[in-house]
Image 1 (cartoon, rainbow, N blue to C red):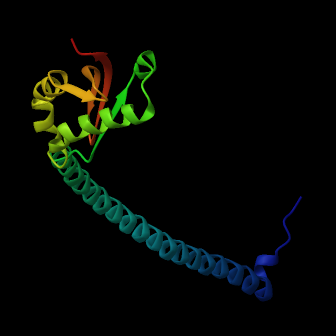
Image 2: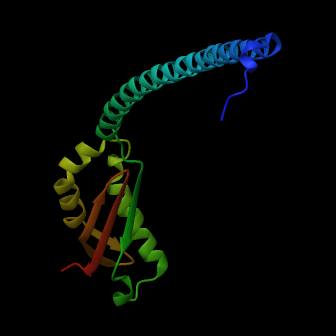
Image 3: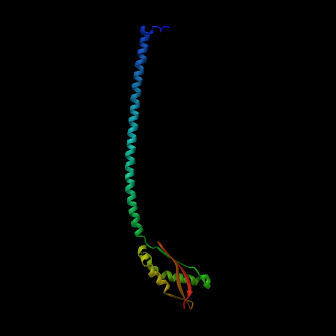
Length: 167
């Protein structure tokens, strides 16, 4: 079997040369466009990496600042309110007015802790406890003593008390 001698005819030679040159030109155009697009993508990726690095650095700085501010804030928290609750008032059949008066008297006794920082209030908690427990509260010709069962100190000082008749 024999290959036809098309390579000798000028029209076929022009066709094959044109196809070859077209393939080379299209390959060059492909490489150029691929290179341009790839260069743009590499530029975008590097720009995003730089942005991410910068944001991570800013985030670290913010986190350090926030940690420092949180420590300072916790150290400088102040007491804003005092809450008092009588736990065994129903045992002595006390009226709600008597309970209210006793709770208000205790609040007045320890109201100086309001607007003080929590650390100093915590350090003076024994003094607060003695101030409440050593005082005799007189209402309606009766004397009462209070005993602290629970005390919580934070922005609100919460005191739970048990009441008993004074001897």
